[in-house]
Amino acid sequence: MSLPMIPMIASAVGSGIQMVSTLQAGKAAELAGEVANANAKTRARQAESEGLERGRRLSSNNRQRMSAIRARMAASGVQMTGSSSDTLGATASRLELRVQDVAYQASTDAMAERYSGAVSRFEGRQARSASYLGAAGHLAGGVYDASSAMNKMKKTPPAAAAGAVG
Image 1: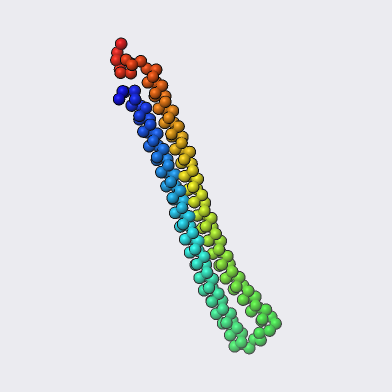
Image 2 (image 1 turned 180 degrees about the vertical axis):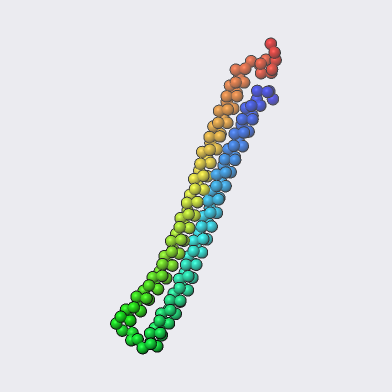
């Protein structure tokens, strides 16, 4: 192997290494996006489950609270008509609204997690696609460097290439 061939071979090897590492980085980014998406889906299911459980507990507490209010009203001789009935109804509405707020918050949290996961997956896929372009760029650069080295080798007289002094 002649000395002028070394830069051409080094350029080809270097370009090959850059291509492979670029493709591996893209694949790793895509995998990371998929893992982040799976984790986000798990967090979304947890948020929904926790929200349902909080809603159930709150609803149960609300029923107990309303029962206690009715019992105190009955014990004190208040009739369940007119303004006392309206007040009781308004209290029940406020308590139910809290249960609905918990359900809405859980749904919103789950939706945000799912969206976050979808974005992570999209970013990973975009990184993978970009890695193909990067690898093609490294290949083109390597071909250019190798052809430049080849042209330089062709233009250099054999005595100069061997390092001979004339």
